[in-house]
Image 1 (cartoon, rainbow, N blue to C red):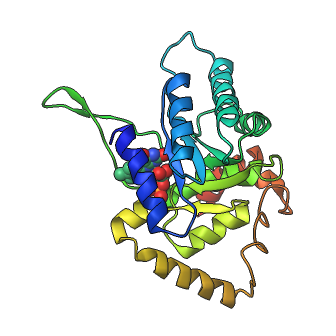
Image 2: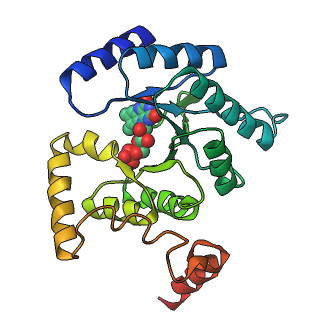
Length: 248
Ligand SMILES: Cc1cc2nc3c(=O)[nH]c(=O)nc-3n(C[C@H](O)[C@H](O)[C@H](O)COP(=O)(O)O)c2cc1C
């Protein structure tokens, strides 16, 4: 889908729905990102999500340079638009919590954890590198829960969880880790948009059974800063996990 069709799509979405519309921007050059960010705002988007899908394959590019690239991009886009800007990140940073802090300081209004990096497969008969898209399952949630729980409390930006949300209890876990937003793609592709109704009903039932009056009440309640054993998110957990297998 080209940019013009996408801008027209935003206009149509805004006319069709009463909820906020968040446009997604996936660009490569600074000039292009800025131009489309502005156009998306003009088309009526209520917020932008920058999907930074950058694969640092050049061995001369350092981690610091990659991070600076993200920071510069956010600063530039924030200067260009007045709507909130979220950044969708991949998990492959050597110091995720520090990167989150830097992006927060650069002005990101939201951090979306995590992009899935699609790894191509090999077709051995054709000797070709082929794209390979497998929809997620709830196991992918754990990486996201871990880092949301760690980052929660150290940034002003809202945290959104994307990856592995398939059930109402996945949403509860996301909220308890510290997310304000739980996103779903694979689940809706598999089950259709009406699954959102099922999720909402199941979420309300779960909350009723566990005596929660609001989502706010559970937000961050199981983040690293809130749990009695914060080392569950650190190295101690590694030892525990390995020995828990041996004891099974
Ligand atoms: C078919 C398909 C298309 C996607 N297209 C985009 C996209 O254009 N931009 C984007 O940021 N993420 C895209 N994603 C990633 C999803 O937004 C989401 O982050 C990812 O699938 C993990 O969430 P899930 O476990 O709920 O599927 C796509 C995912 C799928 C399966």
